Length: 292
Ligand code: NAD
Image 1 (tube, rainbow, N blue to C red):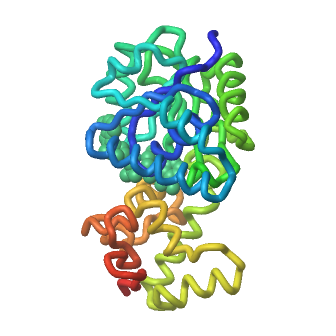
Image 2 (cartoon, rainbow, N blue to C red):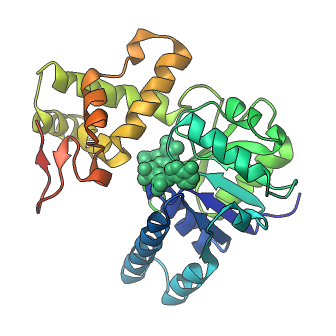
């Protein structure tokens, strides 16, 4: 297997722009794509802004900033991935969307290229089975925000071969991240623990035990969490939180993972958290205001 030099990123949302940022900074060429051309444009602006902030904080040089930007190009369609050694899918947390992406991607990708998914919860074995190369498929699960968080989970599907695992480990290490290896079970390690806590915080709100401010203050001041669970849910994206709870509920068939009906209601309203300006907080003014 050739060394990884060029990395494709499918999906230019908050995770896609973060992955492109850290990969380019670590010296990889990056090809960025999104079904929405506007998302690619705003991802490039976000990456530039975040790199500028790193220069101001003196964590990187201006030269590193310039070189990282020069390494990122955008693709209008999947043909842009033909020269990639690794392609990371980080589109919405919907299995049918991901399966369609893999189907279209395999048609243009080199046979020796690796495919990874940044899924938060969906079975790597099942996603791998929708490709023409299950042995070259792996879960590379970044944390949000990617440039800041130290951890990446690596998840092998049942067929993932050692060469693919080693190449993924090398790639993640080159970006300065620490690795936790997880078995391929719903939501892996971090989200198996984190999401039921967030879901429980939403039940606590739903049942009227506390309001948004009380619940977040309780966990920040009482458990020393850097963000309250509802603030964190808004940061992750409520659609992503709901999808992860659904995968846990269906995959483990245990009622303790039942998504809170209030979470379902927010998602149905299109109140997805920070990315849509409204979730458990309203972000449209100068400072966030609780919506309940
Ligand atoms: P997001 O909503 O910010 O971005 C998703 C992007 O995917 C959007 O720009 C959308 O236009 C694009 N997209 C949708 N369908 C597409 C398609 N067919 N082809 C190409 N692009 C398409 O979501 P996000 O938070 O960046 O999450 C992306 C993935 O990363 C999900 O699988 C999620 O579970 C995972 N993840 C999220 C977090 C988090 O905290 N938000 C953390 C780790 C992993």
